[in-house]
Image (cartoon, rainbow, N blue to C red; front, top):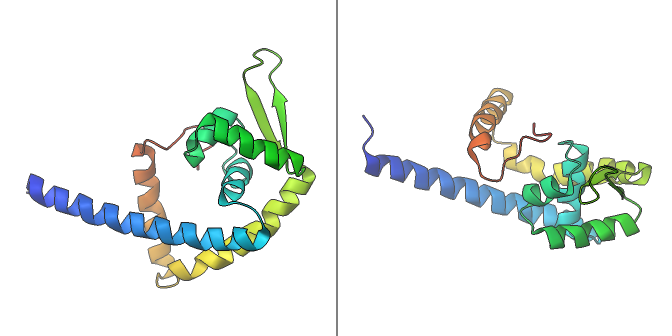
Length: 154
């Protein structure tokens, strides 16, 4: 039987490992985005729309961990660049739906390849089977994260 102290040790070890991995992956993606002349949040927002199917401005803010005002400013920049389009709901003007423009879809496809190439070395030590196991384990843990959302999640 696992004692509470051992459980905390395991939790701490796992949290530290996931935190280090997250920081490393974020730094790698940031380097790609710096070469692209855009902030990481642009990638995070466009990726959430393209890959996760998130279209609500509120869901996007929650997904990237930004306050609604910061998300709105970043979406203003993406809209000005012609990468996204925002549409207000006819029923509730407070609800805003975000979609990628054709230019935004092309940008996502190109930058996705660059970001994934930068992240690939992180997972090279894993065999294909281990990669599938890690993916399955993370899929089990992710719904218990306060940052998870049911809207368009994987």
